[in-house]
Length: 186
Image (cartoon, rainbow, N blue to C red; front, side, top):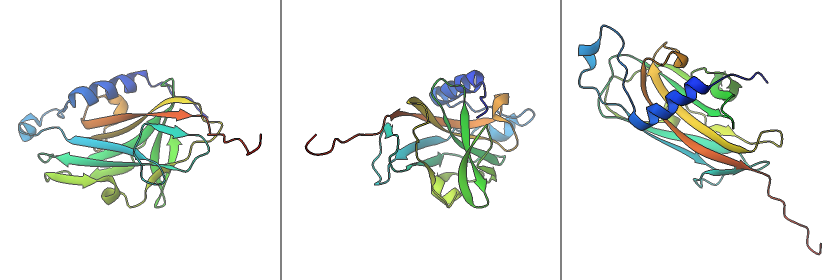
């Protein structure tokens, strides 16, 4: 699997989650002078819907869900990235649309492009994308702290550029070894 150096992206994600900075495209400052950054609630749940920060190898799939509250509209469409940064911060995977089915792939690719963000209100990830974003950790996945993230950026602006971010959120997810239950009588 190809490794991608993510230090600049990871640093930007950390800053964005703390201050949720709105970066306005050049020449359009007056159009968004009253725009507030979105509030993003990101959740990772297991197969029975329990929310938490821990996942196990060889367990059922874990699902990512999110709610995005737009206090005000944005003058430009947005791209939505949802992904996982592996322990060590050197590899990133984002969910992509593969013919109506989400799948994780290496790199930074938006799940959805050109989302209409002109109207204030709430958006649920499952309303924007009809299939659940799931992942089951396998024995060859590294153990440790993963970062699950969601970024909304101006449509067409690459995340690595660091400009045009509307908002971001991330949540740690600690992947632990598979639970081994000893057989009775041993």
